[in-house]
Amino acid sequence: MASVESLQNDIRRLEKEIQSLRAGPSPAVASGGVSAAGAGAEAKKADPSIADRLSTFEKSLGKLVDASDKKKKDEAKKPSVVLSGQVQADTVYFGQDAESRADVGDLQDGAQFRRLRIGARGTSFEVLEYSLGVDFALANQPSYLDNYVEWKQLPWLQNIRAGHYFEPFSLERVTQNRNNTFMERSLVDTFAPARNMGVMTYGNTENERATWAIGTFRTNSDNTGNDSFDSGQALTMRGTVLPWWDDASDGRFYLHLGAAYSYREAYEGRVRFRNTPEIRKQQPSNVFGPVGPPSPSNYINGSPGPFAPIFVDTGSIAADHFQLFDPEFALVLGPLSLQSEYAFAVVDQSGGPPLFFNGYMAQVSYFLTGEHRPYERRLGIHDRLKPFEDFFRVRTKSRGIQTGLGAWEIAARFSNIVLNDENIKGNNLTDFTVGLNWYLNPYTRWKFNYIRAFLEDSRVNKGNSMTDAYGMRIDFDF
Image (cartoon, rainbow, N blue to C red):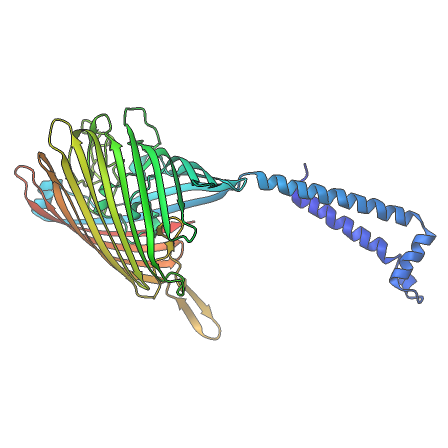
């Protein structure tokens, strides 16, 4: 079938032919004192074939218009495709005291692609949405991102999503990494489930002042969405409310409250929590396990490897199931932003007492250029920042060199995690992080972070230590 563009060209050509026939034979006829319309009528009397040709052209035009409309409807039924991508390039430096080297080894400086992603999203028949994504940076192998199909505009349930994606847990976790303030999520993220295979339903109230999400997931899908082991099932849910939203300023002032809960069967009867300071050169595949014999290059088997300094680690804990809880808070007062979360885990230890692990974080940020942290009310998460003025530098004839500043933000965060309880000695880690962010435009960011990590090592012959980490990231997405 001809393309829509080809049909439109044919329609334009026939329209010109019809206009020409209706106008009359030539300007010379009209110049003899006869109007253009009269000349057309005279031409039809003199040559009846003109009327026949006009009728034929009009019929052909009608057929082409019908074909064009049908083609447009057929094209509209096909799934739309919007390509996306993200590049994050990091440089990391470490400073350690003697106790830190004894506790976690000699940490090496270096650079890496923290994220290197390509994806596609689209809709089909207006009520189906899909997402496809792959990351080529994590753990030195392709990893699946959000890969799902979603049914929208359903009665009561509103939206149903099935596939591999983030479970609804923690404001910091479900907010896209590019919209979080710091280079890495806080220590609270130790307790946040990552992407897993599952199905969930979610939605929001009519006034968009509250959201809800609930789903069931495999407890521990791997980075390619596979689950060939007895990892068990999880039930995860999250709800948020906006007690205060300032409509007059279009959301420059608001208060967000939320809470999340997850009940999870343990992977092969075991569970493990571990994490790095709030900087990393690689990321463990999954903080919950699986577990196994150490391997210098295999994250899934429980070893952090040479590029992911694990500071807190419970080791493998025999358990039937465990539960996760996470209340969340965010307050935005124009350029000033406050955010906090407290997460904890209750583990039903097999052959031992119940275990309790917890962590919290509190952060503050301020936009020197006056922007505020946007909020996506339908999802209950932070949204993409749009600077008042993008960064630029151009030379003009009348005013010389003109520049735009972009958006500038300063931030600080305090976080702590305790993985010690009863017979488990997983250590106590406290991080203090400060950051400077430069948003060149809505899609390009430059971040600078400094982290001081205080580790209380509870293992035999170990002591307290201090580690400094310096990170810089250039972040671009489309």
